[in-house]
Structures are given as structure tokens and as C-alpha cells.
Length: 379
Image (cartoon, rainbow, N blue to C red; front, side, top):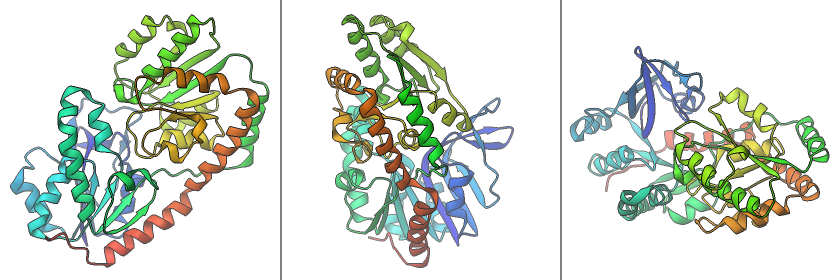
């Protein structure tokens, strides 16, 4: 079987070697190549002078990655005609184009819905606000008519983008390292936690909808009240000038630390060093970083965005707006050693739902149903 996979994922090419910069690494691509003779991936490819440690080299021999340069109407149409089945990952502009073409071609397909395009665009400047309504309704229409949909949330994306087809909620987050020693070390850390607490967020630092500015502003307001008990560490790549300007404006430069990007094997080491994890995003699917933090038994809180409310108790959620500073401060002041211990244990138990074997089994059964069935896209 020849499978076509379409998404706006950004691959990097260095001396004719392809690298993934995120969610489509070798482990993820194995899901698609396992039951296919060949997988053609239509994505975006950027030429680079050198590779970076955080990139993952693509080594799967069954995977053929083609960039979207020149993949206009006729080229993408030809790729669809040559495949047996398609998996379209949304939101993506390439994915929407492939679905539009497939209305007349009628190849069997399924959709993976991994994020909310409305949140992504609406929180991405003036141009995004203009584009958001059109893309929102395009995605709703495609999901409604799709024969099979895999959502990465259990409720949020299903509610905003319902389907009449067969569907499951199955996160693309997989955690494999669970043992009681992790939780015991966290209990000990909380017991010996001093007055000063270290907050942390993993996210790109050059994208405003990741929301780190709201945590920085909250620290500023606390400082004006004479409270300087928090340090905020940010792990992530990108231009830090905007967030540094927010820190300077709020007179908390000494409390905000930019760690930079970390290779994935170093992420858990860093997570074990902080006291509280926060996911302040204004756009999310099911946040991998938050689940990874919870799997280390870290007390956490976050915005009422995407799948975050499916993970955290109501009292540890703040509104998805620029007027949430007082809510954030209330949560920070509530996180004392006693309830931090309770939240740590609760988070650890919730994270267990994302054990690799359990999720993998559910996902593989859904894919097998797709591979063995005939889910046509012809209208």
C-alpha cells in the first residue's frame, strides 16, 4: 500500500539529509510506515547550512519526503492520484488543499486533528484575525464530512470540530518512564521546598500566543506588592527580545531566566529541577510539555486552552485572555507545600493515562481499521 501523508510540518535539509524539528520524527513516522510499502510525506522543506542537536535525523527508508515548492494544483493532484490512501493532518494549508482536490478524486482518507486553527490564527496578529473565521469554518466542514478522525484531545477538539464519521480521542503524547522513585523524589523536593519557588515553561519564546508574557507580568505585579518569591525559567528557542522587554517593563529581569533550547534527553533533568510547571498558551492541542511535567510529579497550572482543562483541576486554570494576571497571582499564592504535594500526586496519576503501550494499542487499532477499510473522500 502506498500512503500519502500531508501536513505543513517543517523539515530541515542539510547537505541532502533531512531532519525533523518536532513532532514528525522517526518514532512518529514509524506509525505510518509500519503497514505501508511506501509513505510519501508532503510537507515544507527549508535548506539549512548546518544541523542542530535538537533536530532528529530522518532515517526511515520507507519514508519519501517532498517539499511543497512547486507542489501547486497539478503536482499535489498527481501525488494523490498515485497513492492508495491518505492521512491528512490538520490544521494545515497543505492538508486543506489536498482535501479539496480529493473531493473529485475520491481516494480513501482519514484526518488527524492535532490543534485548533481558530486559536492559532486569532492569537497571531491582525492578519491572523482576518483569516481565522474562514479557516475555522473550512476545518469544521472538512471534519464534519470526514469518514475517520483521530483527535489528540478527548473533548475540546471534538466539541469545536465535530465529525459524522468514526472517531477516537488519542493523544500523540507518549510517556514511557514511570516508577515510584520519580514521585518519591518529587515528594522529597516539595517537603524541603523553601520560600522561593522556581516556575518553568517549555515553549518557543518568539511566539506571543505561548503566553509567557502573562506569567512575567504577574511576577511584576507581585513584586510591586513586595513579593519576590518566584523565579521563572523559560526553555525554548527563538528571539527573546519581546519577553525581555516585558521583564524589563515589569522590573523582574533578575527573576526571569532564558535557558534556551534543550535536547529532549535533557528536558526531564530540567523538569526535575523546577518546583512548578505552567502552560500559559492561548493555542494548544494536547500539550506534550505539560504531560511530561506531570509525569515527573510536578505541580502544574495553565490556561483554559485546548486540552489543558482535560489535564488539570479547575482551580489551577486561568482564563485565556490578557486580563488574567490576578487569576495567575491567585493560583501562585495558593500553591503552598501541602496542596503542592496533593497536586503532584494527582498529576502523576493523570499522566499515567499517557503510557506508551496503552495509547499505542488504541492508535494502531484505529489505523488498522483505516488501512483495511474503504473510507472514500469522493463527494
